[in-house]
Amino acid sequence: MRRFSPGWLPTLIVLMLLPTLVSLGFWQLSRGAEKREILSHYAERRAAEPVSPTQILYADEPAWRRLRMQGRFDPEHSVLLDNAIRDGKGGVELLQPFLDHASGLWLLVNRGWLPWPDRRALPAFDTPDQRLELTAWVYETPGKAFRLRADAPTHAWPKLVNSVEPEALWLELGREGYPHALRLEPGPAANRVDWPVVAMGPEKHVAYAVQWFALALALLVLYGYLGWHQGKQRQAVIQHRSSHEPHRDL
Image (tube, rainbow, N blue to C red):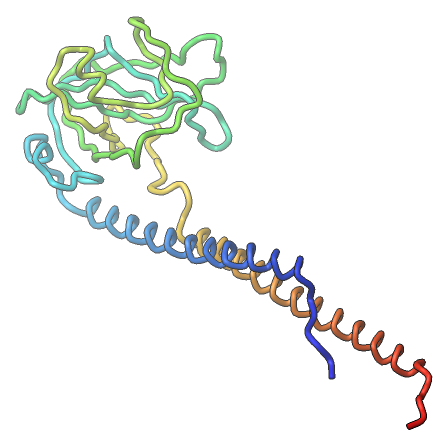
């Protein structure tokens, strides 16, 4: 009779790795479901009519809501968000305070991406000085941004930063402003504004989940083969020894 005998070390390795691989697979599936919900929520909000800054100020869930504003940019206090990559090229995102005349509320508007080919000098940009009517949508940062280093304190403008913190900006400027950044829609004053909604789509999470489950299955198959193969070898050794033992007369 063939025995299943993989040994204690392979068994220990499988007991350690298998739950981890399966858990990672289900985690990727859950992340994919979250991304689908985000995309659905985003599409619903972007299809709605824009509201006023006063209405958005008291919204319970402002993320991705559209708003229409009328006013002027403040060209003296621009913020350049570093490490913005488009089509493999480095650049920055240009954010500027915008005063909505109807509400008197300051809004930090992201005007979009600018190329930065020469890092020896800050990228050039211009700011419309006339009164503008703009449409933008609320961008909520998903958690606190990870930074390799803190932004160096400086009083020079424009500021080059690694993360955007509107509340800190309003505190520094002594202004009453909206606590989230806005992303400008295509139109007047907009640069390149084709932001991805999510960094990784749900289909990629599903693909990663399949990979983790495939690794778990491969581990089980390898473990099964090893166990039966070693059991077969041990059984053969036992049979070989028994066939060469001298027979005793009863």
